[in-house]
Image 1: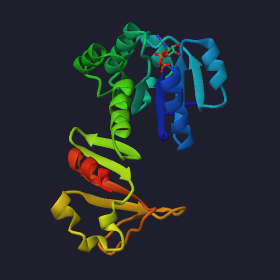
Image 2 (image 1 turned 180 degrees about the vertical axis):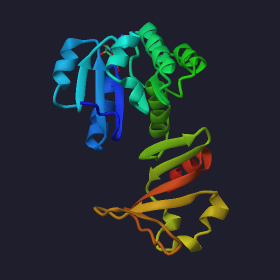
Image 3 (image 1 turned 60 degrees about the vertical axis):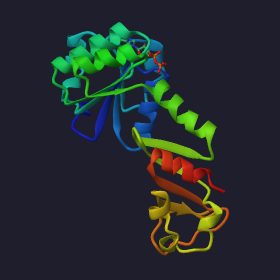
Image 4 (image 1 turned 90 degrees about the vertical axis):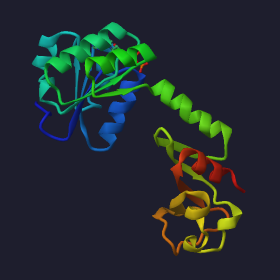
Length: 220
Ligand code: ADP
């Protein structure tokens, strides 16, 4: 069965990263074609992903046979075998797949993939390490840097925000950040607006320039 027409993604390399990615895509309702050279891995994901096939992704014919060129998005999640990663990306670029994502394990690996023309290069260890640094350092309960220098920080609201509508706190002017959303204990997330009144025990999402958002999250 061809699954390329629907909301679907092909994931090549089903190691820890590729499997986790594929399972999360499935959980979100996206159809996944998984490809790996290892028979045991293919067996273990059989029936779990929409389709799982054993193939060597460095071979053009293999990917053509699987109609991988009909996918809009293909993720190359091969890391440790850099040669296989590069060859696979090269095959996909030759097939003119419009959205090629690839995982890189080192800076040089990432550079080569970028030079080849891979559309989106991800470095999970490097990115996760950076992210955890921000969590370890400060009061942030969670942290996502959207781009270099701009972040979303999850934290507790500092005392100066308690009991006053957000619109009257002078937050944007004084601190250069915005509270985008909040959650009461045991409640759901809601978008914050000028009338939102926060209390101790709430959780907020602060949006702004990284230093400012982090600085604000440190306030008690
Ligand atoms: P992780 O660190 O996420 O576990 P790995 O790089 O160790 O990632 O795993 C990569 C996966 O890609 C392995 O399951 C391996 O069998 C698969 N793989 C490696 N080379 C090829 C290839 N040429 N064709 C298809 N799958 C491959």
